[in-house]
Structure formats: C-alpha cells, structure tokens
Image 1 (spheres, rainbow, N blue to C red):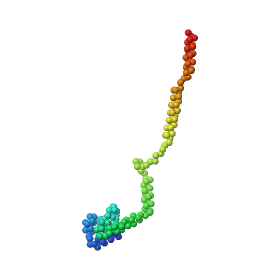
Image 2 (tube, rainbow, N blue to C red):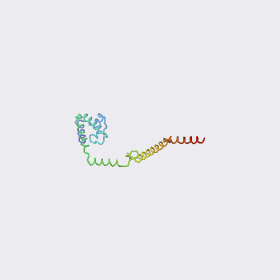
Image 3 (cartoon, one colour):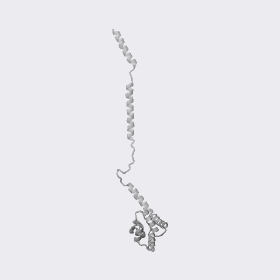
Image 4 (cartoon, rainbow, N blue to C red):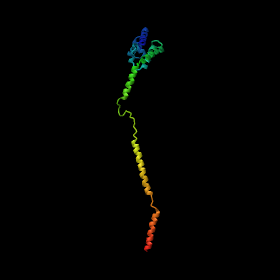
Length: 164
C-alpha cells in the first residue's frame, strides 16, 4: 500500500494539487488523505471505506480508478494471505482452551443423563398395584355356591317341619 500511496502522492504533486485542496474537493479529512498517501492502512477501521477513498482519489487525480483499485486489491490480498500457519494453529488452540474454561451454570450445556432406575421402580409399582387389584376384584366377585345355601335352607325347613 505504501507504493500505491506514494504513486498517488507523486501524481497529486505532479498535477500541482495541494493536500488541503484535494481534501476540500474530495470531502475527506487531511489526516485521511495523508494516511492514504503514506500507506497507513491501520488508520482506517473499514477496508471497504479505504478502497472507496482510494478509488475516488484516483478518479480525482485523473488516473484509471479500476487499475488503482486492482492494485489496492492485490495489496490487500497479499497482506491478508501472509498469515502464518503457526498463527492459525495458535488461534485454534486458544479457541479450544476457551471452550474448556469454566462456564456459567446458565451458559454451560449439560448432557442429560437418563436414569433408568425410576422407570423400573415405576413399572414394578404398577405391576404390584395391578396384581393387588386383581386379587381384590376376584375375591369380591367370588359368590358363595348356591347349592350350599339351598342345603342349609332345606335342612332348616326340614328341621322346622319335624319339630311341628
């Protein structure tokens, strides 16, 4: 970016335009223009905003804005593609360490353990209840033999008739 900034500065000086004049015409601050010409990319928060400034500045200086933007994009690609593999691995390890740290009980995800004992006890209790109900119902529905009742009534009648 420094080469591109120097090229833009050289073109501005060659055209006889001062920094303040260019800033007034482009509606940008003097510090922004000086940062573009010095190649100070870190002064800008947004790379896309910087690219738009460079494009409008190139157009203002009478340069081909597409070629200047292509040069800026090449710089940006070279700058961002130089991230070392060790840095990427270190960031991955740091991310894994952050995941292992203690979390708040409100944000930590718990694996829900399924307890089988309560279900087995419930099934056993239901089976026991069904067995007890069966025994009670079978005892209630059991009727005395009618023949035995009739024999006892018949013997009472016979005893009464013999007594009279």
